[in-house]
Length: 72
Image 1 (tube, helix red, strand yellow):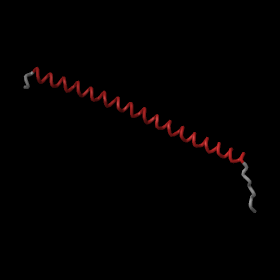
Image 2 (spheres, helix red, strand yellow):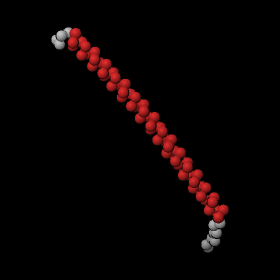
Image 3 (cartoon, rainbow, N blue to C red):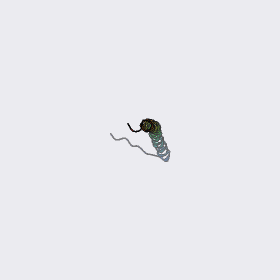
């Protein structure tokens, strides 16, 4: 028993709109995920920069203490 299905232009338009909606939804999820990762990377970069500044500060303090003590 075969079903005789005729696709009219109205059906094709409906299918096209449904597929477009699916693609747009998937792209939305993808870009939401990308934006989340970008925010995490930015926070990590800021943390690394701050750690570098802290290390530079500590290094300067150590060098100043060595210079004050005459290298002893």
